[in-house]
Length: 321
Image (cartoon, rainbow, N blue to C red; front, side, top):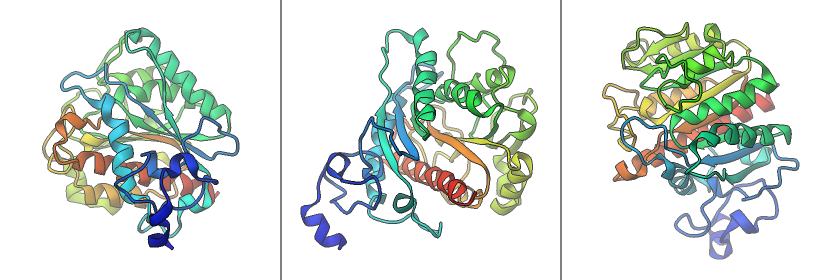
């Protein structure tokens, strides 16, 4: 029915009658919600809410990630007609997944942003849904973790990144995308002994006790061994998964603010995200997609694939518990 549906279906994000099922409208037209899911602010019965946080006022180098959520959504339409490959089930057939739209905030009132974001995510969690967040710069993970820790207690963090983002910064009012996991450890939002960072390739003497699997180690040990190590660290603890797109080598994701050579390949990232099935993932984000530096669209495509994998990982956890 896919080809027949494409002749008549359009704007499924606002016209679909159910939150479930694939979309077969033309990928090059229509309203570009994430995976053509329903655009809605009604979270009644929703399992997973995809939300965009177009914030990039915490960057240290190249800006532009405020445009990331829109670019990821547009790129995701390429995947909308097909079940995710290699997972053995189709999340959009089994779960009510919606696009909750972007968070509204006053860009000129930067100091108000963190608390507003925590409230935004808390609202999703209080409605009985989980969040999958499209950034935006990586600072957004800190206010999000506040909301999740309030519900689950100190979390395990699985962080894919070129940078540890644990540089020392004891000023909790300061908004910086390189220090937020230092603050998250200090605030008791994450348990460093049960957290792991993958793909690191920038120097930071103080890891705050977080386990590190740097990019070279992944290259040398292979993805299966890396995943086994990750699972041994996080166990069955409630886990938040944060994927900074600069975890990928710039050859695969050039459109980001702080690219670093020697990173993961898209194949390595795909294999690890798939093999992480079984961890107790409670929420996640993909961040730092910067369209102004993404001349081919490859970074947005990578970001959309990561977001779909995170969706699958969350749904795997939900359906198998």
